[in-house]
Length: 373
View 1 (cartoon, helix red, strand yellow):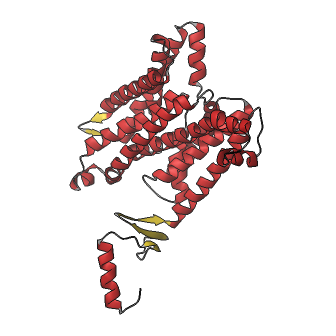
View 2 (cartoon, one colour):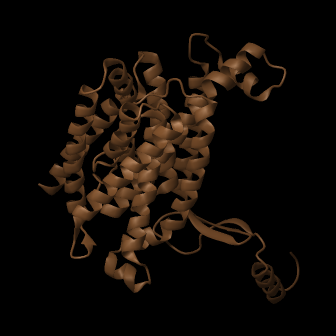
View 3 (cartoon, one colour):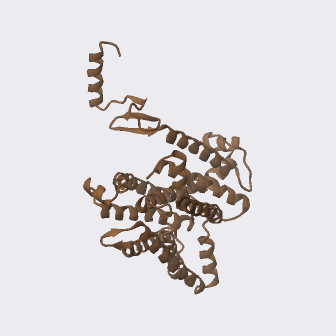
């Protein structure tokens, strides 16, 4: 743009008032880290450079794992054949059938389940302000599992939507019980929430064992195999309802993120800013439980992804509090990598995540102990 500087400034201000985009520039303010400003029509913000680089690397790593997943199986495909089947209309019909009908739904399921678990874990760790505040630690995953096996064993239904409804109701009831037990003088203490959740999870684990032992052998074996957490046998019929529900829940997550970040300052500070702390906390619990129940209904109780993904994301990007997009990418990468490993070893994916997550939990507890010693 040419012309005197005052004229240029007036034109720029007029264009900014109309919501015109000025692209991406380096942030002028010193935030203590390198950051980029972006301005688009009706949207602006600041993106840390480190977070952006981490997200790009994770996205490419997940794509590479996805290609590996699509090439694995009884009929091996090369990466070239996978790309040809995905993007070429006149590709080999057998390769297209294998990729699109058999292997791609499993890949999308792994990515979606990883995103849902990671976002759920980030929400609960933000609410409790504790690294152990994860739905599989504080019992919400166990509650979803209880609701699902009640539908499978007592009601005799194996339909995906019925199991999804049972998992959602079981998780919601468990969350309500834990929340009510953790309330003291109108507030919910993070440590109290975790302790009550662990106790309720132990009780529900006993109930689940009782249900399995009191059922016939075939039904109990089916429920037990499903409880290991597996992506086997999932196809387009289960995929699209899950993707649609996940999209709705992620929109709700986007709406509750700003007040959740205010809650991290403390209830008093949040109320001073006009945030209704208890309502926001209840809404966050409902959305987090729904994300966990969605995964439980589709693939069974997959443990430790919700615990590990948000913490790994915070360490990678050097941030604190809610880091949703890096957490979601880490969750997708972990679960997809676990599924690729599970296919190689012939195990359910839940077994691999328990091994990885158990090792991470031991390391986390040991590091916390050394830091407080």
